[in-house]
Image (tube, rainbow, N blue to C red):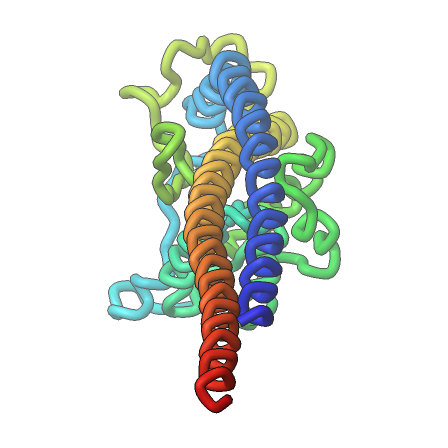
Length: 316
């Protein structure tokens, strides 16, 4: 009985230590959730207007058609609509944003499952931003874009990447796109709904969709005449557009990550408190049973002594 009581006591202490850790992580995630909310608000207020202007420039009448024309994809070759040739793009590129840390519930597993479904026919080249997605791609032998050149970026925290790092990555990705070696550029991330819910979303980054009848929205083409047929100018705009898009979606994905971790740590903390209560009750019951047993033994021993004395007197 004593060993059982000590085992329960050790279990209680272990769960209490876990409860302290989950409680601290819950508070940290709540603080980072507030910071990430501010970052996303800033991105929506200041980065999205620039993204919108860049999109209008890239789809104006004098922009290279490669940035908004529809490209052939692998599915067309499979059903025999278009004859396959080595010059035709056969893959799409997917930027996958995951976290570098765990303890965030089903956050990463949901993203990875979605990515696996996209790669059902091995038709996707992945750009995994975040250690969890990077490790999954390596483990399952998925096609990773320039893995040796960008492995340090892939294994880093997505929200800690600098703008220069993202610019460098965007340049290489767009070069592949301009050579028609990929048919499209997509991004898979978590879309924030509220502090307790998010959705897995996929956005098409390239090719762009024409805006309005002329595709130029409120952009005055006359202001761009000096850049007519200047592909370097539009290539730089495309690089900035893609980089800002990635930054904007990283901001939203980071917010979802902290929200998911806060919920996971809250649930773990609540479960730990319930377990401590259950074990404490079990401990008190076992201790009470042990004390009761000891009292019974004392009473029985005392009564046995009395009975022995009575029997001795009767024998005399």
